[in-house]
Length: 243
Image (cartoon, rainbow, N blue to C red; front, side, top):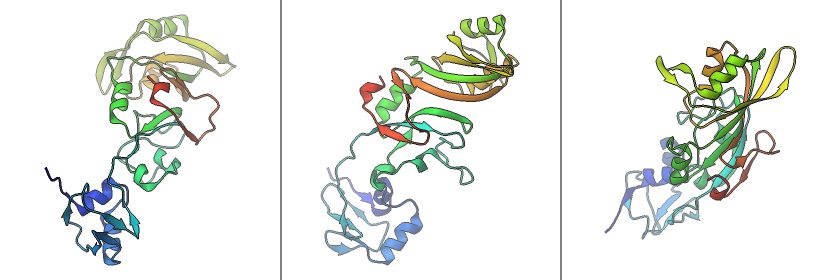
């Protein structure tokens, strides 16, 4: 069965262009050829598995992109959301891979703007789904610094689960192991392990207990640890490193 796609759609999917304006510029410059003929129309349809596509004198491969998995040390001050905010840098700006591959990559889950640490980036939707599956309850370990020190009752609430408000709805957290890592006159750093992932959950938990978060840093997902990877850097990993 013949499966045809529009030229613009194909160029986007392969990561060759990011905007329609970029595609139009290539077409105007006669830099898009299919089977040796210049194609000026972005709505032109063709079979990517049979037809030969050349852009900027470079043949575009028709096969599937290889599945890739990366561990990124996300800095504070970067967003991970699907919808990019031009006013704030996105974590994908830290990556420097081939454009075709770049367009297929995405962060697994989220770390908010003011949170740093371990972030998995991949183009494998199956593995991403397994990591985020709430049924699997994959552990995520954080180092959380809070004002002052949690009380014995606070620690008991965290370790046994307690009520917080998430998007104006009451929610009871799952039991979460917690222990002190470091302490000074003004703040305390704890290791906290979650097996769930409500939006801004740790910040909501600590605010509910009256101890606002000063800093939040993720160090582990499942058996994958951040280790000594420098801030803003990434390295390729295997899916077996994660699950």
